[in-house]
Image (cartoon, rainbow, N blue to C red; front, side, top):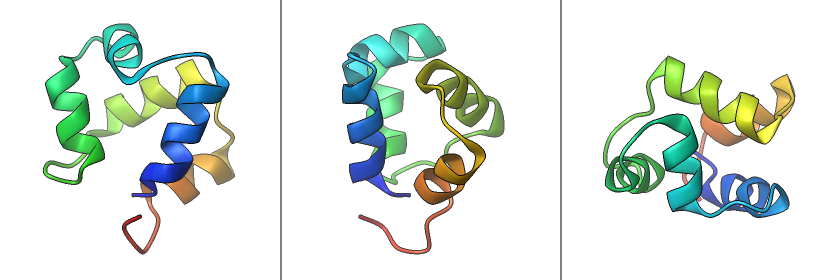
Amino acid sequence: MNINDLNAEIARCGLTIPKLAERVGMDKKTLYSRMKGETAFKQPEIASISKILNLSQDKILSIFFADSVS
């Protein structure tokens, strides 16, 4: 999980984490937990976030499937 890239993409879209959580349909506490690496993102959540943030396939891989935790 590359949290810095995800935060940057959220900001580029003019969103906040609570607003993104609302658009994804999840509780903001759940999204924060996922972003901290306490729990794993589910595939439908990744798909929804990627669509909302208009992420390319490469960006999806670099954010959600990064080898190291940022």
